[in-house]
Each structure stands twice: as C-alpha cells, then as structure tokens.
Length: 358
Image (cartoon, rainbow, N blue to C red; front, side, top):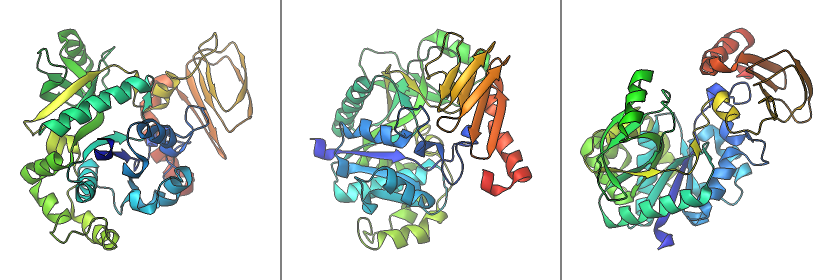
C-alpha cells in the first residue's frame, strides 16, 4: 500500500518576511530557523519520509534552488526535483507533479505540503495523513487538513465545514484572510478551521479536477506526448510552463470543486510566516526573551527575539518586544508588533542597499 503513497514538498518561496536571513538566493526553507541543527526543508522531508518512501517524495522548487535542494537532501536524485522555470503560483506546480506521479503510478495518492511549517506532534500528523490517503484511495475527493483554531487569527484562510458524525467533513466554503470581527464570529460558530495549505488527493482525482476547472492549463502541460519521467520532460517544462496561468490551487480548484473535504486536525501547527510566529515557537527565558544563534546578555529587557550568526556576543539593554536579526553585513531591528512590515522593509532595503542584500 505504501508504494502508492507519494508526496510533493513545495519549496519555491522566498520567505520575504524573514529578511534579512531569508533572501532570494537562500530562502528560509533552507535555513535552520529554529536552531535545531536542521533546516526547515530537512525537517519536513524527514517527517514525511516516516510514511512515504524516499523514492516517492518530490520537491517542487524554483530552478535556481536545484543545488541547494540536492545539498540539503542528498538522498534525492535530480528526477525527484520539479524545477519551475518561472514562478506561477501553486496550481501549475501541483498539476505538473500530479501528471508526473500519475505517469509512474495511476493508483497513486499524493500529499502536497509546504516545506517550512512547524509541527509539534509529528506522530499525530502522520496518522492524519494516512487517514486522508486511505480516504482518497477509496473515493473521488479532494482533501485538505483543517487546523483547530485557538484564537481569531486574521492572517490565515478559514474553512467552513458541514457538521456531521463522520471524521472527514464536507467543506461548505473557504474564506480568505478575514477581519478581526469576522474571525471572532468564525471561532464562536464552532464549524470553522484554519486552512493550513496541506492537501491530499489521488493523482487521478486532481487531474480530473483540472480537466473541469482549469482545462487550458491541463492542455498546456498534458499534450499527449507522455513526456513525464523521460529525457524530454525538462525541455518540455522549460518551453511550456510559462504559458500557464498564474493562479493558486485554492482559487483555481479548491474554492470551485464540489468534492472538497476536510479532516479537522490538532497536531500543534504554525506556518512560520513571520518572525513573530517563529518567536512563538522558540524557548524563552524568564523575561520571555528568545534567542537563536547568539550569546546574549539581557539587561532590563523582555519579550525580545534575537537571531544572529552562531556565537555572536550581543548585549541588549532596556528593549521590550523587539526583533533583532543580524546576518553578515545586515542588522534589522523592528518592533515585534510590526513584523508584517518586513516585506516592505526588504523592498526598501533593495532600493537603498542593492539587490545583493535581499
């Protein structure tokens, strides 16, 4: 059965809210963001590899990151890399993966997961994935995992589901990032979950969904020549991928299909989208200060997050609720409450300091 289990790890993003550590040349998924000795993509691969055979794990990434992926995951070969010649959001990438997987194994069920999430209870996560694999092998459904919300977060999408006794629920609708009042209503209603962007389906079912909802994209990437898993695949993708519409799987398919289901899960999850979300997952001292890499003396300081090159000696006095990040010849100091602004800060740094610093 496990021979039918496949996974696609999405690792093409830039992680601009983690500047200055995350840059276009070396994005956050390739960094040890948590100070554990493993990069985020290495941790994600190991977690999934507990359930999915090594040969059945594919990495979808920008072609600029080919060397980085192979350096960090030496157990993979080039044929397991889906190299996007241009960025086109998640739908084309997922279709590319599904066509490649289906060509190898028409009975395949596949997981699509980001490379940069934090998961606390990995055993529970794997049980949830196996439950989803078994459901998708049996029925023509498109599944996602829904995180039990513990506060009205306005940075996540929400999934509303039908209340019934079965473990896997039919999805009523998706809502993109709501305002605070709406998020509060969602939490109180009890039938909403956070959308984690983790998907499970059979290769056959997702290709059928593309045939229905994004037929032009299917025509572009499946021209009947059976190029997948052959020597012609790379040239075909280089010539055709850029013709695909720039659209997410959520907008393109999940919000339109009528066979979408969700499994409510609670394994301790964070999308690690900002320095603030990372701060929430790090160990703190008695004054709620968190440190990665640095050797810090805190004086009258609390609620700070300090990240520097390994062993850098830092003294922080009189600072409260700040992010201090140092990387080579860049230092960024920003209030924790403004961590969403770092994407804009990075753009300003590009204009003022030059491209090589971002």
